[in-house]
Image (cartoon, rainbow, N blue to C red; front, side, top):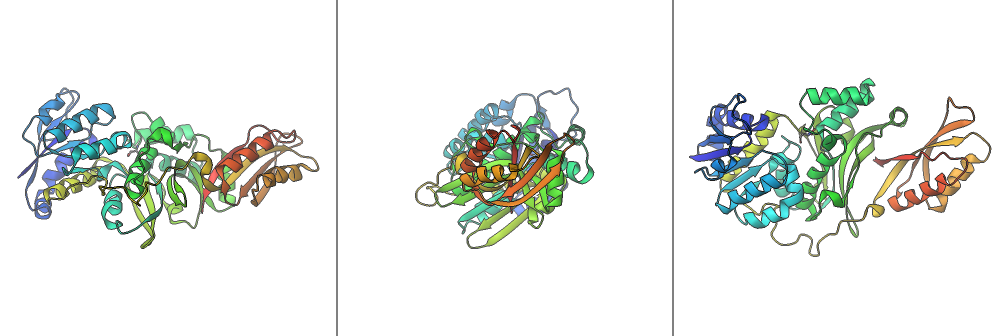
Length: 420
Ligand code: HSE
């Protein structure tokens, strides 16, 4: 029999304990041994929990108990880092769903774990087995790209804003009421939650050791109705994407709102669902789709890890012991990012303005792909919306600075990156 202790019996922890009981027979058939949840920790013993295991408000009771596997679901970074480290030091296997912990400490934890199992399927895209896919199923490949909808809250909000015209504020409130959003929703709408998940995927795929502070992270709070209308007119959806792309000289890692061509499989992923598209050099394009949050869906991934441990599977945590790809791949600077861009400008409505705008772009060798001029309510002003061919972030930023310096162009220029 394998005994399981749960640090943090909240929504997911409750589901883990209950599914282990409800599906006990099939789980023990698959694991080859009976798996029993025996103890869990909570912040306050006063709150009623719907679980049939011993509860304690002292995390160390779990670490010091005779359980074989510790499931860490408390969230945060430093407190779980200390607890998981202690669990590993005492020889216990660990399963965690904690993306923030791994975004900061995955390499130290891999070192501490050695060959002890430290599994984390639930940390990225909830119920979708994307960690297993990258670590095991696709392990024969050089990974060319990973493009993912990794935050259900943002996808739910963008879907409602675009398909139903619901306002940003109203739809955020709705997502919080439905329980999708993090305790602090800026983690969702600011792109940080997706960035934590992207960093975990990038470590498995490329061996990139970066922290959230090292990569480009933007949220969804600057999307306007004009952007939405443009997207609809030109056949794009707007999604918050986590993007990892292998280039000749390194890897791009970025999280931002993106216009995605409506023919891309990821453009069809609506509502709270997550999806990850992975391109490998041998397998070609693959696509993984499913629920990225929710108690039972996340518990499904946690229990899959517990079963893997029961079967005798173990480290290394990230799936490799020595550096991948010979020389370590480096993280490319934000300026090196290559993308197509959508630009939104306000310009004066007079002869020669278009020529000035296109000339500022051409000086940075940026080629225009499409252009749309819209009348504005303000006299003598028009809105200019355009998309570019692929160029470097450095060049588009230089072009925007040149455009701002023109008398005929307003200062408020915004852009959205495009994925096709
Ligand atoms: N807040 C996250 C989301 C939950 O919306 O996807 C799962 O990490």
